[in-house]
Amino acid sequence: MFPSKRLAIWLLAAALAAPAGAEVLTIVTPLGARVELEATALAPGGIIVARLAGTPGVKQASLDFGKSAVRLGPPGSGLEPFGLVGLDLDLAPGPQAVSLTVRYGDGRVETARASITVGSRDFPQKKLTVAAKYVTPPKEVEERIRRESELLNLVYSIDTPRWLGDGPFALPHDGAMAPNFGERRVYNNVPRSSHAGVDIAAPAGSPVRAANSGRVVLSRDLYFSGKTVIIDHGLGLLTVYCHFSELRAKRGQNVRKGDVVGLAGSTGRSTGPHLHWSARLRQSRVDPAALVGRLELASAAQAR
Ligand SMILES: [Zn+2]
Image 1 (tube, rainbow, N blue to C red):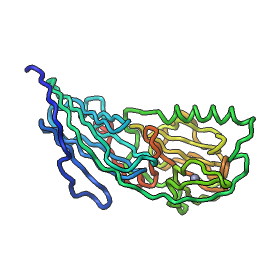
Image 2: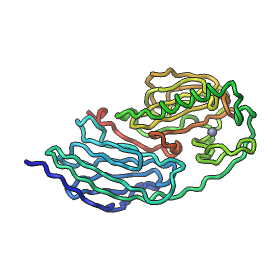
Image 3: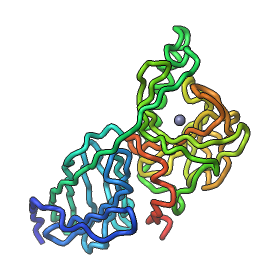
Image 4: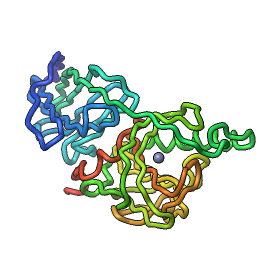
């Protein structure tokens, strides 16, 4: 058979009924490939799961969403049949173009385009008082801060093509969680970047657990976030645990959901013992609270 190339301008087919709170959209291409998009929230901080729904003959599908490209494949393709897209907390509300390219085993290629509308989310403002050195760091730590910011950039760009998680996400600590993701922070009357995580009340020395299985990609003391552990769960998703009094995980170590990775504390720019918990999805700052009980993804590798 000669390969033929088709291009289709396509609209989202339907908004289907979904579990409470979830929104599911399905893109169907003219040749019948189906990709389902399910969002924890179609708003800043939300996560979209893209799933390739059993489509015969598909070799690979790629979904372009803004700066994010996600590749999906059927079992045996070396790719996962699902991928993740993060909606950064500063993402402007409004329509976002989505483009889906499907490659078939017989050489055919087709492209479908769709648009999804990202809603708005209001974030509160909060004034805080911290030691002056954390608002205007002294000269002698500028070099340290610059190096650590470069290191974090590298870590946040990790995009492991496999899903390393095991079932849904769990809370890393049983303390009360403040719903303060995205809060606009003003430190000592100086506006600073948004609060990209949630704060969990955690007494000093209490154990903090991995929210899901994965690989530890950072475990060290950082100027702003103090003793910090970062876990790679695969598919570009990382969770970050800050202000520990003690690190209990090593870089490169594989951890399972529930393993203790550190003891809560107040190291770095912190106003008292607590756990600052955040999540990154290919550089996008997403709401970690939205992960809990969600993203029950079965890796193709695990299924085989
Ligand atoms: Zn925090």
